[in-house]
Image 1 (cartoon, rainbow, N blue to C red):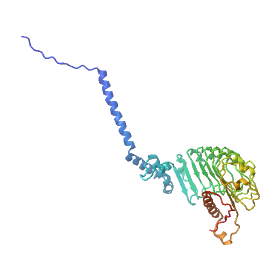
Image 2 (image 1 turned 120 degrees about the vertical axis):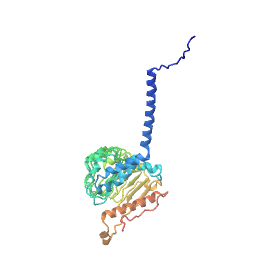
Image 3 (image 1 turned 90 degrees about the vertical axis):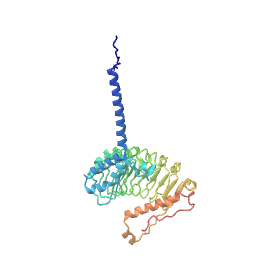
Image 4 (image 1 turned 30 degrees about the vertical axis):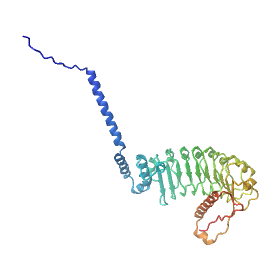
Length: 364
């Protein structure tokens, strides 16, 4: 009698297959883990945590400095973390994507020390302080686009300003500048330059002719006896305000500024407008004082597409007014008045056929 036997199949595994299977599972696990980490890192909770960590770090500053820096600290953290209120539309969101530093008030005599480390800033707005100069470390702010520093009593600009190749706007109005550094001509992307009422400015360096993208130039209320040569080389210039200076004539080659659309020449001693100026085909508005004006090209009078504004100075001013109104405040008020008046003229379809008389001494 044969005894029965039971056969059992014993599976034989290749160790290499087991290893591949295990490595595959580990890889999938790590991928899931990485996705989870990315999801958590993008969550609002983590972002808020980063924001608070940022604010806690700021507590190491002095209380006065924290108060001063609060404006751009809030904006910068919101921008970095992309945590914006729901009521802000897309256009406002784009506008908020700027790192901004603001400082106002005559109690300030120097900039906060920590400012030099915040080189990510894109805008400086420093107004009405007693800070005497812009520090040389400004050259490290390579992303700076707006440098707005009016009414601070600045006597000079550092040569390092030429390192700001991203700069778009510069406002140094109502300071005490004696000169403009030639290095400013290296700011190749500058589009707007304002230097109103520095009183003693008489010339500009030729290097500013390298500002090929400059569109807006305000050099009013200074001591320019003629239009600087560098201005005649600014090929993109569309707006020029050189009012309230010491001009007696205009250069014959003024038509080299081919893109000019608006020119303010009032409060000067100009008697003749050269014929070459009529060659500026894009010109839309010409503002000048008519008190001493003798000759002007007929194109400016006959062409309905050009608004010719002839102003007469009003010399009347009482002693009481002079006691109550400072010279610089009067100039500012007058400038605002002129802007409003000229804006109303721009909205008209045609220019007035009569001579426009406007009081330039606005009594407050």
